[in-house]
Amino acid sequence: MRLDPAQLRWQVINDGVMGGLTRGSARCDGQGVHFSGVLSTANNGGFASIRSQLARPVRGLREVRLSVTGDGCRYQLRLRDSEDSSAAAWRAYFETSGKLQSLTLEIPDFEPVVRGRRVEILPGLAERPLRFLGFMLARGEDGPFSLTVHAIELVGGDRPGD
Image 1 (tube, helix red, strand yellow):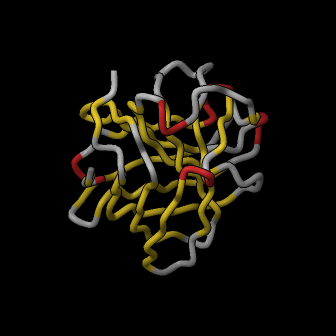
Image 2 (tube, one colour):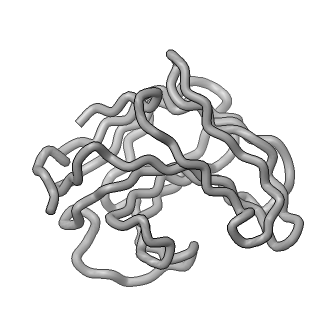
């Protein structure tokens, strides 16, 4: 399933939900979605994220292909089957280079986490009805960040979920 990041409805979720001071935003145009801002570790902060709900749940995911331009930071792609913040997310890290990149993240690249801590959860990612997709930066240092997501493809995730 190919997704046009500029056509998705992105929700910004920064560390302000926990008292942090990070300022992050999402802006869409013909290039994709631009996720940018200033990360702050003040008040125990230090993360910025955006999330979008998929048009329909997806099962049977084998890999995710991304086209991105980043600022050299290490970002996370997060997949979720629930909007509940205490529910698991599956995260995979990817490095950006400052140039346009095509990346492929396979199922073994993803690990289940709850609020950033690794957990063991069954069934695995491929069996879950994925409903949300997002990007996160949590690098532990202050400063500006910028990631443009030009294209997203969910490969093998053609079966409708629950």
